[in-house]
Image (cartoon, rainbow, N blue to C red; front, side):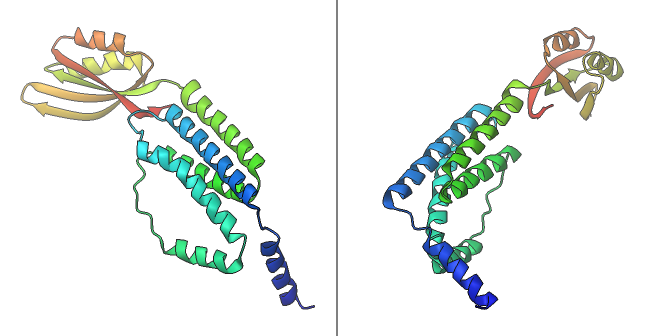
Length: 221
């Protein structure tokens, strides 16, 4: 038997030996749906409200089920698998990703669909638990100081105000400066756990008319 025949026989055997029963198919689909719901809940838990998208979170559930169905289908026939590859290669996705973390959840959902579709639901469950623990710990538990934008407006001494801000964050960065006659607008980027004391001290500074504090959502470290 030639190498070509051996490869051909091996490929055909792999496709003919992976026929799932109806019960197995529904079981794998149910597992994929439950894991998709689990991913959805983790997404709701770790994603900030500013970047939360209901449409995206629901798509995480459906994406895993679709991927599972595709993987189950391509295992039954080499012709169907080649057709699927050709069809998917034509599709072009142009949806902009607002938050880099969305890529993690998208790939997580697709990976779960692939693993479950390959008939390894235990691996998918274990993988999902590990990923969920890591995300929750590093995004909700081990959170450090939050980056905030402090907007100071008035006819103040910029150097004096900057020194006050440096008392709370030595690595403060000036994001922008705007001068309009005698009025000055300065935007500081600071990383502090509590801004109440900083804001109160800035308000008591001579020449400061207004202080605005804005949370910089992606600026945690």
